[in-house]
Length: 234
Length: 234
Image (cartoon, rainbow over all chains, first blue to last red; front, top):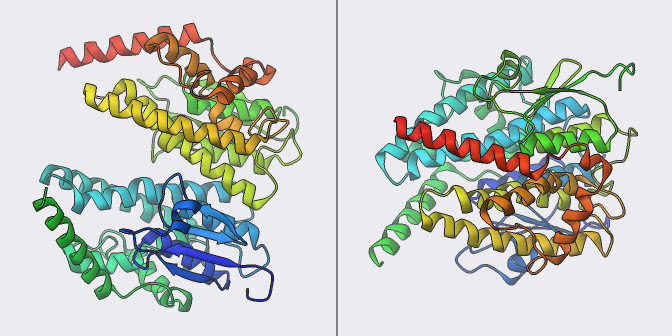
């Protein structure tokens, strides 16, 4: 949006699914922005002053005003740039509520349990995480069927809010499979979402934003090594 | 809205702050509805079929269509009944984003840590909960100052989304003080919010909805006794 009076700056990290969510929304809305890569071990003063409550990425700064929390940022982008690119949230209030319900479900249940399935402190915690992940996948598969009504995306013929929300996990679906041998959406348990992963990942706007799985794998291994070293120093 | 073609039914419980939130929104929007009291130990088929994912109250059923999750329901009410009563969310996209940010903060941080401060499994967990609660109160007090700009409510001269979100806790502020000797918002730590609690609670729409503190105290004691009995039977 250079020259249009809008200055957009995104504070994020390239691997964060939450920052990727915002990048996807900006991409689908065809909004240009300054992409500021944060070092989470040494957060910038701009990040700390823009999100003093959580001190987390992503933060979108629009004409100097910071907006925090990825789902809130995506809704903001949709509302502040009406008429620029496609609408992400449906126009109908009921459909909007349903989209928000499932977007919350992605973070509160699907992502939370998936993370627990490999980050749990004990094998028992991990097993419980995996069990809940499989239940969440089953719910999401049914939701996709209901939403898409045979069309390619949650948003119907084109991507919507929920595609963006879940789409941020697509690169991590591939990386997670390589790292842990578990594919979040596969052809057996969730054939519709498995096909959606490929379809979403093939979109130009997604390809422009989502990192390569191998790069995420290297990053995850490096972080695990850092965590192990930190633990052994305690 | 009898006779206006809208049938609204709320599945809730009288003591649930999440159901109270929806009742407050319906009250401020001057919408009439059927108030269905659920027994959470024996959930109705209507509740289970309306919210099969979480099986929780509140659920608002509008002309047969269910909407779940209190903050999503309040936003739905505001969007589906534009022009009926006051708008709860601000019109400006940035202000909407800020209201959503703090509404999420109320549930994810303030309420979560407050609950932990008296429900924690160990004294250590409770102490940590209290510490986080005090930090969250400090953040909320600063947010109120920024939002209200000297006016009586988060929404300015009249109540808005954040007043409704936090207002659902007002009855529990009084009950919590009686139960645990700890007042969430008090005159010393959070004078602005302490005054807001009284101001909000004195509104007709709030008085019509919020239960008496003594009734909540009796209810909480009964639930504690039930939980203790269940634990001793295991």
